[in-house]
Image 1 (tube, rainbow, N blue to C red):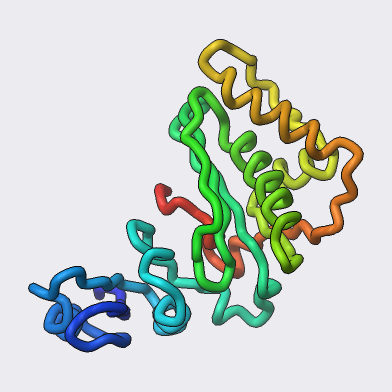
Image 2: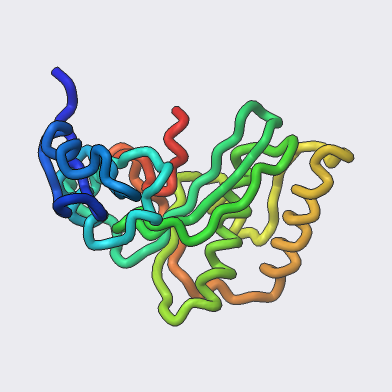
Length: 206
């Protein structure tokens, strides 16, 4: 059986949430500048409809399984994740609002990196972003390794520094220098993938 989808139309003949592609298509087909996207749950669609189309454009749909878990993640919060093609390989990372999936930062790809390095840099970037934000909230990562590295304030990678990944190691040096002597006042939390599904910042490439 195909999975049920919910279609959000931000801009079309009629806007709202529709439960079939035919209903959605009637609102957006031939409509100049139509803005619409499919989601895998009504709750995810409702959260997206309250946000902006640009926050979801070009991103994989998320079922937001955590909405239906007995114990839910802390909200509001920030979620971070990284993606790496090969090891080493091009690595990138991003941070999103846990509840809506709205992307707040994205960096990379950087040559010859690893997923753990990307996860570590994502956490540091999230802390730096939080420092400039008017509100403080927990940060979720699904990487035990990256969380341990961050608490140690050191990227403990065994990856060799080369001319290819020089830019990436410059970021690591800068991140470690930024962390040195800094009190981490933000809660760093482990994302429970088993209970909640993929972390909202996941790149959807598995």
